Image 1 (cartoon, one colour):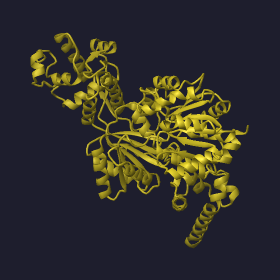
Image 2 (cartoon, one colour; image 1 turned 90 degrees about the vertical axis):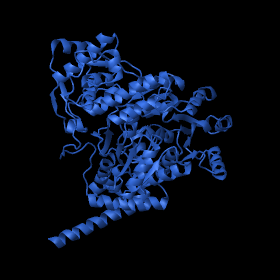
Image 3 (cartoon, helix red, strand yellow; image 1 turned 180 degrees about the vertical axis):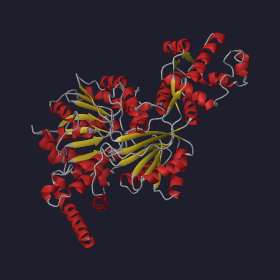
Image 4 (cartoon, rainbow, N blue to C red; image 1 turned 135 degrees about the vertical axis):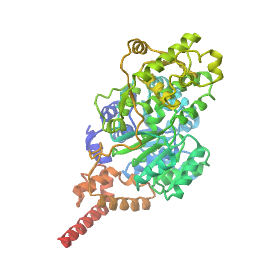
Length: 608
């Protein structure tokens, strides 16, 4: 079977991304498949292309109404017969689509899990010649996942109702524990399991000390003029406040959170997808399955609760592979807020949440490569000495000889433990070092230990940072749970006894070093022509009532502005131009390119 020919014909691409071809071959062979591929890695193609190459229909389980419409719009623009069924349709529209399904008119159907698992729906589906189920966002089925959805648990019954049909489970973020749970819950039979690299080389990661949060955000958004971005906030109130301020400062922005009416959330999301709104200020309620490829930045205004959430949310930037920025504004007060949220959970949930938060703080404070730190969390090694795509690699923070400070801290941990017979948390140790006069210190006699007050030369925040760094580099360890009491590790004992030199990190600077090096994913092109093509794409999208990227991605436009095709044959070689889009769009785009070249040639002649 000519998979590459089918890829070019239907989707306009000459080559597969990593693992896509292998997954597609297994799907066509009727095997169960588990695929973990990062956002923007091309998961959808793994079930879309097989759906076009075999008899029968593929049912895609998707959790979000907006995602269904998005995917179906894009498939239809490529000439592919697809539809969806969800609560956004009125009775007449739904009935018409059921008639089309019964007539075998569609190759793909998108549906929510709760609708799929209705007995009446499954009975009707027996008439549709189903070839495969594709379960998108499959991590939602696992209680260990960061986005568990009870309605996904019903999918475990699929094997009982339709035992012979192959299942493909797909997700962008899952630890090993979650992967195993997905396979178990869906009862996948001897599945072929594929785990792609978590690395997103086109994303630049930065952590910035949160000093004047709104001013920092405004400056960043203004530096990304005319580009789309998402700002994640910890609360609905913050999302609303930031929207109001950004709007007053001339930035088109809308909020998105669970407190809004459903129709308002949908309206704001649609406006963002269609580039009518440049910035969405959102809680974590926003984003899963958002198929907008040209999100150029993601800002975390507040500290995420765990690395899984952070990775998935930053992954919504640069899905098209073009350079994009991810910025985290970080402050100690945000850590305190997160710990308050955690204290509202039960004891078991608290234990897990505290461990996850500590990993998030370690990422924010590390002086090592942030990309390597992220990948390591998901069990992947990053072998390069520098990623050239994070603040710590682009602008390494200064270090200093912190041996004396580390010795004071380690000694204080041990003296307190000797005095009381058990360990204490970071804040108490810092209070002892700072010589604080607190009831907890007096009651326990910790004002009598030799390290009481030896750290008065530094601010409490500096000692807290030192403690967290010693934790990160493995000289102390924190007990799991709410109080996270500290103890020396074997390496910490050795450092204390042998007075080993210890290097610590100075606080990081706010601005990264400017650099001239080409960024991963960058496509150099005629920027003026690119903007003209963007305007044309927007006009064509509005005429068809679809988001602009359904017509062409920014990658395709940049390739057009680089190669300047002026004939249909040349236009057909542009990535993303399949047969249907060649028929629909060759004329207007090649005409615009020819006009631009002629105008610039005339301008050059005049100047000469």
